[in-house]
Every structure is written in structure tokens, then in C-alpha cells.
Image (cartoon, one colour):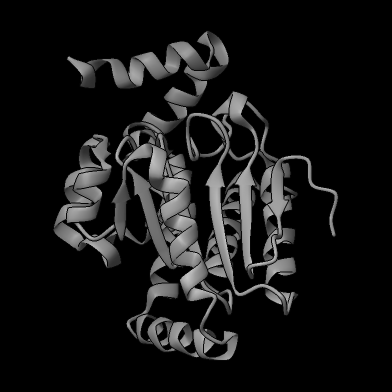
Length: 271
């Protein structure tokens, strides 16, 4: 098994794998290394015949606050736009890889589930959330669009997705459940147990049939063009990065720091 440093890989005897994002001091913001480890964990899960279901959760007070803006993201070689497009398409491939895993996955969400965190949760098969969970894409106010749109148009419909993307306003677990983004909502102190108990029930079904149930539903979505839609969204995000709004905000981060830039972005929406 891989020696993980940014995630916890817990393999008990009940066929349920629990992956914990383990950067609580950064609200589990996803660094390149964490994403690299998550890739390996997905491979291990899929190849392990003793595992049937994977739960992904977060350590500390939040599930995931998105991508770690405090770490320089390596973009490879080529022109700026070429590097950016390659990076955005890599994100699409990673999250579609999660969505395409042969066996079922469950996102166990508490606290903040923001921006890239909604991409992670959105590409799991099911989402169970605590009643304190908050979702949203506040970075859409200044940074561009989500490369995969977190499957929101598919899960919540185009009108609700536009309403949320246009302002970046956060929304609660109860709202997410009402709108089809979340399967179940639990009191915070019951989330762990409730998610695990359901996963254990899933694991009672043979892995072969679980794979076929999942494949049948995913194939239906693929016929509607979900992969092409995500690739297109990623390309539109690259275009967004070339706008004055995004470039000026990134300059503000460099000149005034991330905290000041976040306040300039989000402060007016709190009034």
C-alpha cells in the first residue's frame, strides 16, 4: 500500500474503504500532492477484491475548501494558455476517473464543501451530509468557472445551477438535499455512523452486481454527453482566466495577499 501523507487510507474488514482528506489545518484544501495521493487511492480501491464501497470524508472542521491557492500549481511546458488548458483538462480527467470507478463511492460531507470540494463530492455516486454542511462556489465571483461544473446542471438542473453560479452564494445541506445534490442529511454527530451503516448495507450486495448497477446509470448519463460537457466547461474556464476580472484578482493576491483578496471578493456579498 502507498505511504500516504495527505490522506488516511483505512481498510477495515467490512469491505468498506474510508479515505480521509487529512489537511485539517488548511480545511483539507487540495494540494497537488493530496490530489496525487487521491489518484493512487482510487487505483488501490478499484484493484482490491476485498473492497466494495469507498467513503471519502475530511478531517477536522470541514470536508474540503477547494484547491489550495497558497501552493503554486505546476502547469508544465508550452504557452500560458496551453499550460492552463492542459491543467484544466487534467482536472476533468481526474474527476471523471472518480465518477467512472467500477465500484460505488460516497462523499461524507461536513462543514465547508466549496469550489473544488464540490467537484470532488459531485463526482461521487452518493453524497451524505451533516446538517452543518455548507456548499458553494464563491471563487466563481473572480476566478472563472468550475472546470467540471461539479455536475450541478445534471444533478440540480440548469436554472438552479445558474442561480448559484451567478452570485456564488453558499447554500445549506438542507437546500442541497431539496435540490437533488445530496442524498441524505444527518445531525453532525450521526454522520459517521449513518454513512458507514449505509455503506455496509451496500457491501452486502455482490461487487459484480454493484458494478453493473453503477455502469447502467453512468452509461445513461454518458449518452446525454456528460463527458463532452465537462471538457467544454474546462475550456471555457481557460477563457475565463484570460479576462481582466480574473487577471486583476490574481494580481491582487500577489500584491496584497490572499486574505485581502478574499475580503475584496466576498466582503460585498456579506452586506
